Image 1 (cartoon, one colour):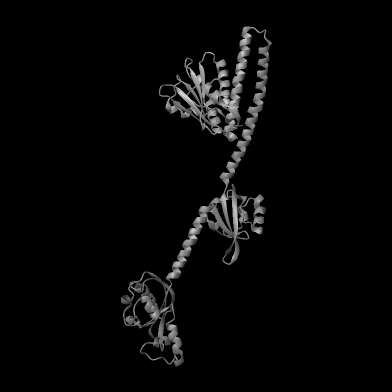
Image 2 (cartoon, rainbow, N blue to C red):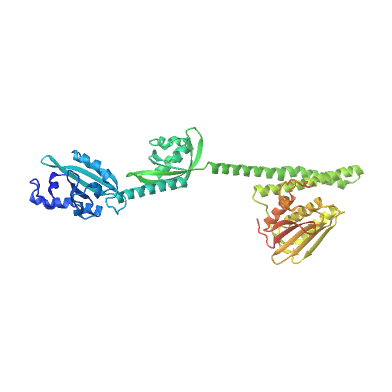
Length: 492
């Protein structure tokens, strides 16, 4: 600060170093907008302040003159005093940050201050103090930092790691991507070529994507520092970094997805193999056995023990065929996305009547009754519904007492058709109802004609038709299975 400025006081005469024509310019400088200026004597009491300093203090200019700093600016005086002492010692202090308020009624402010010794003929005459309010700039910088931190947090949440590079040289990286690559700190990536962490067979893919500026996701395999390979999905975008064109890269660890896809592929392969073995390799020899036993039974001329033996063989072959059908249905439902139904127009009572007649022949000593009412027409898969009814009826006959009659009832209503199978002698506790429809269920002996899948498959057939199968224990005794079917089943 030129020493002549000290002499522009209200009652002072200008120094010979300041010609008359310079006064307007010095006055303009001292009252420069945005910068508060105070001229202090050697006791650090203001002798003059400009309008900007008065505005910062919230007092009239004349109210500053002759007052000690601690009285004028009590909040910042402790921070200003050491800086002013350095100026009294002949040192210039520039751009020193001070936090506080010059005005008692004002809030805390971020100030940038400077002090300079004022000399008069080589002797110290006082100190020049200038103050610039940088509160808004500091707050804006803080907001920018907060926004940057927020965006980094969003990036950390949105992907499994991100980094910035120029022509493959890494500039910045977050901790997540460093951890993904087996590094302890992001600083270990800075300045290194990203090809170090790309599997050799994918390096050309990455170079091609960089040269073409690809901004669509693509997959590569990264190599960790321990040699482990990690499949990742990459999404990159061209950005500007400190005035230079750069590339921002986000990556996602897709190890779980790849493992899931591999499991699905193995499951599909296993399904195809299993269905092939069950549907062809097992049924072919079984059909040969059935044809052979059928031919022997038709030949005649066998003794009674031989007929019984052939009959047992034929019955065993039928049981095996039933098991294969159940296992095929179970496998399709679990591995192939559900049972297939092919609806066609039909009448439900005709389907159920055939099932009842077959069961009466197989169980000549059992009382099996069938009742029907209402409209029983609809579009269903008749063979599947026959299987459903046979499974329900077979389960009731298997587990119910032999002297208890079994009643099947068909009822057609506006919304659909209901089939119920009731046995007064069968008792199933309510807590076991849900377990009845589990595959390979435990707790009750499985039917000798199957694998314990009958009720499970019956429910899946009902669901495949858009219907439902439930069970209830009646108050008067017995158990009733209830099937509800819409009149129009959806094709699978």
